[in-house]
Image (cartoon, rainbow, N blue to C red; front, side, top):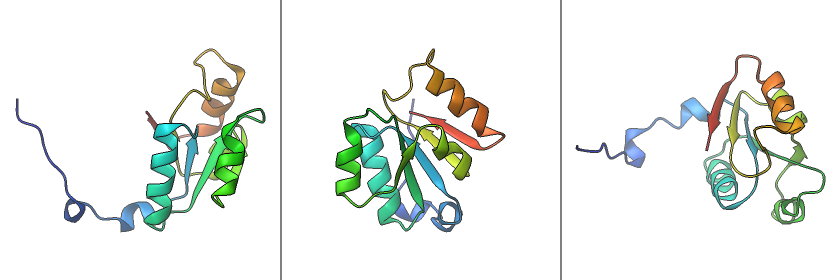
Length: 107
């Protein structure tokens, strides 16, 4: 089976630059996605639990950090990337309730 390979010139960044993106989680995947989006000029916020060890790391990089509950309400696109959300947790239900028809990408 042949895979499709996409390059920078295969995309139109204008499509995502007009959207606000919330990334829930700031582990290895969330961290990479947030920095990539920010470098591309996309408005991005990170949703983290109040007790997350990643809060200080994200804030040290001058990134906007909000609660897991607040981030989806702000965003047009929501990326769930990491352990911040356990599928049975209250935080996960909180994010799902705030999606309200927005695009959600689960990592």
